[in-house]
Length: 272
Ligand code: DGL
Figure (cartoon, helix red, strand yellow):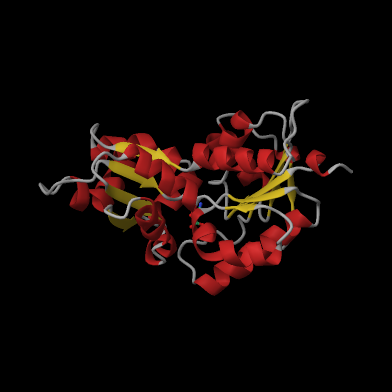
């Protein structure tokens, strides 16, 4: 088979990476996309680097064995910990993470260079965003805020209202509403968080640009496929979903992330 006909594989710990799939579908309507949500082992963001790397290698192996032309780590936590390991494991497949594209989007959105990153505990502790942003803008002042509860809220489909805004305020008020000069840009450094962006915007206020890495990651994937001559142009692409736990739950919450219904019969249960 011509390699350009193969699907692009994506994985995340759960349904959050569907925000990346959605952006890729818009950017690359002709590509087939195969998405694995490791729902049985979510969350990744509170686990240690060795565990996350092991999970990322296992999830990727499931996708690679089906034949893919590129691998997208649709999870900031796995991107921040396991990008190098995955590139070493699959030297013949482009492996694209979401942290670099997210860092680029935040630098483009910030006038002052004072940038906040909300992400999982592991992504913040590993400093991946802080380092990626300062590589692009050495004078940037980057503050990282671990917001682990946002993952559970998004997976539960609780995305707005006083409870969600109360939790967001508890995390964000010390940085954005303390009377000190606040960041002008806030990166959603977790693929689950775009679902909460309206509630987050209500807490940080209208002067703060909220950015996520989905669109810039889709651009990066499209550019790489074009560079290596593997882009596909001529027909309507398909989505295929794999989950490591309840296909019904994946379909229900995944539909919220995609903005349209997923039929449980379109989700395949896999074991890693
Ligand atoms: N969606 C993942 C991320 O982008 C992590 C969620 C989790 O499993 O903790 O970091």
